[in-house]
Amino acid sequence: MDQTEPVSGRTGRAEQSEQNERSEQSESLRELVVGARVVLWDFDGPICRLFAGYSADRVAGELVDWLEGLGLKELLTQEEQVHPDPHVLLGAVNRRRHRSDLVADFEERLTREELRAVATAWPTAYADPLIRTWSALDVGLAITTNNSPRVVSEYLATRGLLDCFAPHIYGRTQELHLLKPDPYCLNRALNAMGVAPAQALMVGDTTSDLTAARRAGVPFLGYGHNERKAKILREAGAETVVHSLQPVLRLLWEAAGPART
Image (cartoon, rainbow, N blue to C red; front, side, top):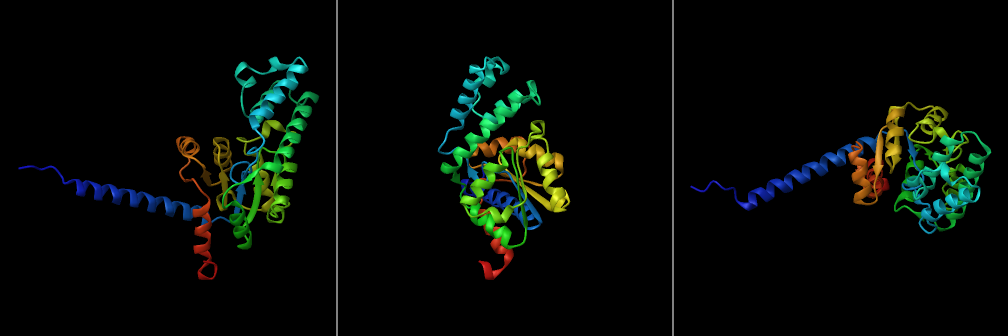
C-alpha cells in the first residue's frame, strides 16, 4: 500500500507553517513597536538614503586622494584605500592619528560632503508618515547616528520633520572612537530623555546599529530594504527585520484605534 502523502497535504502544511511564521513575526513586531516610549532612529538608511544621488564611493575616493596629496595615503591599508564607505576611512585615520589636526580636517571634509549630499537624498518610503505618527502619539523621537548632526538637522528641516526630533539629535562628535557600534550616542539619548533602555526601540539598518543597541540594552528593529541587507542583520542576530516601514506604520494606526485607521 502506497504510504506517500498527497502533494496537496504537504502543500497545505507548508502554507500553514508559513502563515504561523508570519503571525509570529507580526506579533514580535507589534510587541516592539506598540510598547516603545522612545524610538531611536539611525539616520542614513531608515530615514533616507543620504548618498542616493551623490555617491559615497566617490566621496571615499576623494578623501583618499586628499590624503595622498598630503603624502599620507599609507595611513590606510590597501583594503581601506578602496573601501566605499567614508566612515570606515574616518575611523581608520582616527585610530592612527587620534586627536590630531589631520583627523579634525578629515572629519570636516566628510561633513561638507554629507551636507552637499542632502540636496539629492532620497526619503525612505513611509519614514516621513511613520515619524509624524509616532510624534502625534507622544512617543519620544531621537536620532542616533554616525553622521554629522549638522547634516541630520538640515535634512530634517527640508522634510518639515525637525520639530519631531529636536533637540534630540545625537550624531558624530569629535570623540570619534565613540561612534557606533559603541552605544555612546544611544546612551546620550536615553539619559537626556529620561527613559530606561527597555522602554526604548532602536531602528537601524547595519550590524553596528544592532551591536550598539545590544550594548545599550535597547530592543532593536532591523530595517533591510533588500534581502541582502536583511540577511546580514538576521545572521548577526537581529530577531525582527522588516523590508519596509509600512507594516510598522500600519501597526501604529491599528493600535491608535478606529479614529486613525
